[in-house]
Image (cartoon, rainbow, N blue to C red; front, side, top):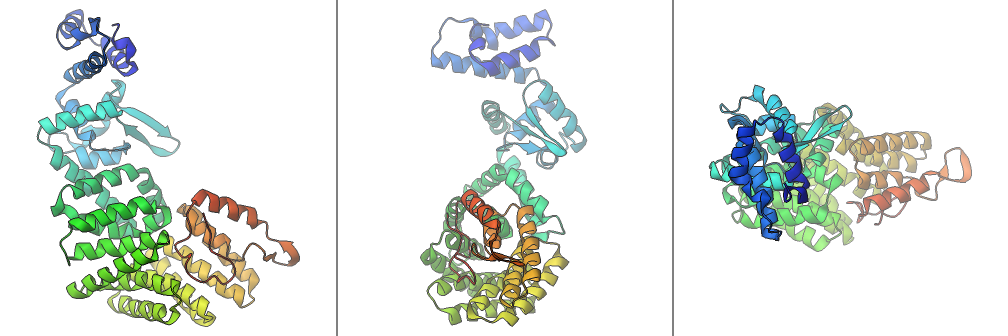
Length: 451
């Protein structure tokens, strides 16, 4: 097969299939689709035809369920795990109990690749050429939109679990990171289906803690503003998208855009009477006020958001408000109130089983204790905060936590000796390559991390 030899993928597919074919089957294959493999034309078009013919031949030798699963798996971007394949690809034509065996069959026939990762579930993927071929078959079967909808629904379930938390937040952050390409694909599906923007906006709101920790802020912001343009003017969906976009803008230190997004979200939330959007918009719109030196205005907005969230029992909105109010009060010198707010917030965080808000609250409590002169307790709290940040791989937040004592602060009990954490702070800041989302807020002991 002179042409197949120029394509490692084509050669691998052909080799895998040869062992299971009779001479008659091989002859029929060579006489039809694979007849092109013997041509002398070495042009690029022929090479592409060779590969497509080899893939088509392999596809034709599969069973009906294997063919259908290959096509449905093409909706995944960046790979998938078995549980995802079950949720997205199973139905009466491919029962859930058959998925594992079919994945194994496609793996044996070199249609799928697999990565084994210690105790983690195996991760499968289609090479891009194989994925494109599967997408063509999915379109031909008239199943593309329905399968993409199931793919989005699967991502949405992950988002709901992340918001619900239940002591699995760190695990879910890591899972969502592995599925980042699938997340972009799911949101792109919604961007091409305007009727689904509302569902996308709900997912976006659930993912705010994840995106604030992991970014990438610029990419997330572009996706959110694009979706917001598709949402009806004045709709709840637009309000949800804009307050999360405002957080991404503040994380980029673009306070003008943060203010614009936050104010529009607040107007929408007020008009549609959605308390959660109002609370979140009040919180994020306080950040540019603080950046402009309006400490009282920022505090007023967050205090109102905190009162509304507590009244309506919106736990995540309440935690967001506490996380924003604590550094404002630190800047104002109200240490006792910081301790009160942080301790109450920690109790709520523990009840929810979440880690992201808890890490920030522990850090603010550590700062307040440090300012009170309670250095041993402050250091213990800062270490605990760093542990939670490390668990969710929040490098941006970890940079902030490592700054709590400041690069020039002495090691507890050893006056005159600089903290050994200074090098670790610098290394984490370099790896994060972005500034903290709280960079605009006055620091009680050191400057904000810079990229």
